[in-house]
Every structure is written in C-alpha cells, then in structure tokens.
Image 1: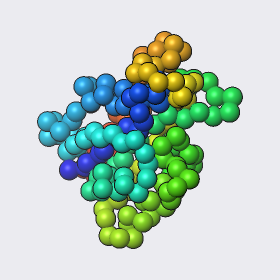
Image 2: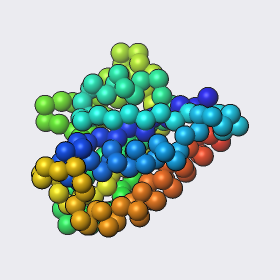
Image 3: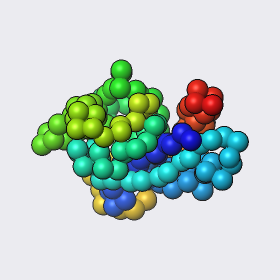
Image 4: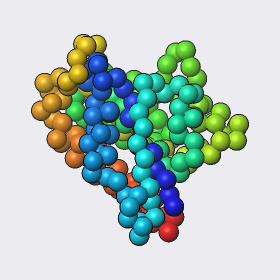
Length: 169
C-alpha cells in the first residue's frame, strides 16, 4: 500500500498564514482513500508550525509527501498556487528558518540516520497577502479566491495520488 502524507504548515491565528491548514482540512473531508482497497493507497493528514528537523518524526514511513504552505514572493499575485519538487525547491514561509537546517538537508539527514523518508516530495505554496495580522480568517482577496485555490490544490493532489497509485500497482 502506498502511503501519502498531506502536511499543512502554518498558523491559524495569522490571517493568510493558515491557508494551508484550511485547505488540508477541506481536502480531508473529500480525499480519504484508505477505505477503497482497489486504489491500494492511504492518505493521512498532519499539520505543523514549522519545517524544522522536527518534521522527520512526522514524515517518516511515508512514500509520498505533499506539503501545503504559504508563500509571499516579490510582485506575487495572492491566490496563485505554485508547484515545487525538491528539484526546483523554493523556500516557503515554514520550510525554512534561519535557526535550522534547510528542508532538503533535513530530508538528507533523515535518510542518513536510517529513517524511511518519502521519495516523492511535492510542495504546494499558495501566494498570500497578509501573514502579520492576528485573526483566524483569510484576507478579503484570499477569501474570494479560496474556492478556486481549493479546486486547483485538490486537482493537483488527485493527480499525484493517481500517478503514485499506478506506479506502485
């Protein structure tokens, strides 16, 4: 059975910073394949505040890891969804911290110490506009775009799962 972890990063109390958590919560309601034996696939969900080496304990044992995080790029358009892998990795808000090792180095460390680290790592980064204001709702622009964002993320996750399911059958 192929095991996928959807890992949402962010904080629920900093407006747009919690978009990954919100999306993962909605995905969990709609994408749960563990009860469909013909897919030979299981999806689990987790959340974290940071992408430090502490993530190793959360991600170990999975074949596929899909991270959903917020990003704020220069001249970015709030609501855009960027797709990254380890080959074209770009720092998101929570995967990098100046006090920790980089996310790719965290994965290398996990392998080096003998943990089963996901071979297939995908990162979905949602462009946000406000990550500094305390509040548990999204900014107005992300609230308007949320259905589109969720639809795109859901389609992308389904594509990943289908590819992984076919590869491992």
